[in-house]
Length: 88
Image (cartoon, rainbow, N blue to C red; front, side, top):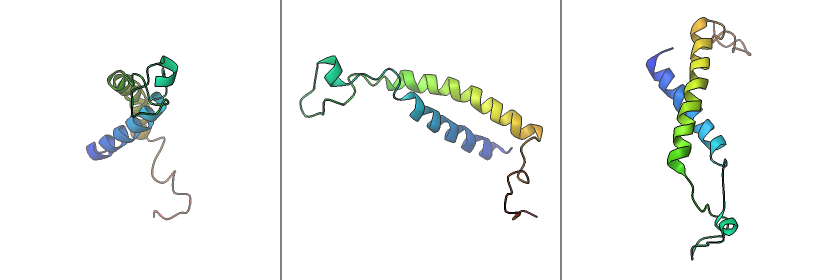
């Protein structure tokens, strides 16, 4: 796996994981009872983006290590994924 492929894989896994982590611990302004004027009641009261980004980075590091190990071990190759026999 090249450095560019590793960076792309890490970034892809990071964003997928981030979108899975975002709803964890969500509390809307309506639930908190403090609705800021000009925002909907369903807006987050405290998004905690920095905390969720840190959690995402830790989880992504573990997932990426597993993906990297699978790819570099030779268990998963381009020929394994060539369903339509396009790669010669």
